[in-house]
Image (tube, rainbow, N blue to C red):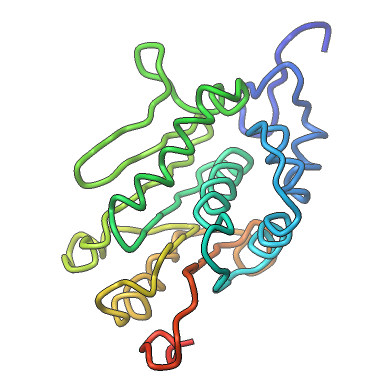
Length: 224
């Protein structure tokens, strides 16, 4: 590269150390993408979770406590937003507070990883990470956007109808007060136009649900 920054498929520079060939490799190796783009090494059980999420349109993860489900959601949504241009992502959790914890990972990587920081849009010299009352939003230079939303958004039919995502992440879904909101409302949000949706399991639209499993008396058990 003769010391010059690389401009690859999205039309903006990642970093002088990231080449177009590396980007193609990371599209089909998300564990490598986590290492290069976020500067993190994930343990084996999270590698398996990431690989399954990366190649599957719909997953339900019922791993136990403290297995890093929220962390994995943050990592996968972040690298997909970097590698794919114009990606719209919605993140919902059982509480807005839990959703904000996911958003904190983006803030952490913005200061710990130069490549991730350069992938974000900037405002007045700072990464464009918006802390709104109705949504926390991360904006990327390639046109992608991650929207961390409060769960009560689903109670407002008009507002939730305006949401359209390529990828949806629903964390701690078993504590949602209304499961119909998930099956009838959230599923329909992952309908943002995507030319690869029917032809590529990696680039297509994805929906992921995660929560600690419940006992048979829980309504979530029959829903699964």
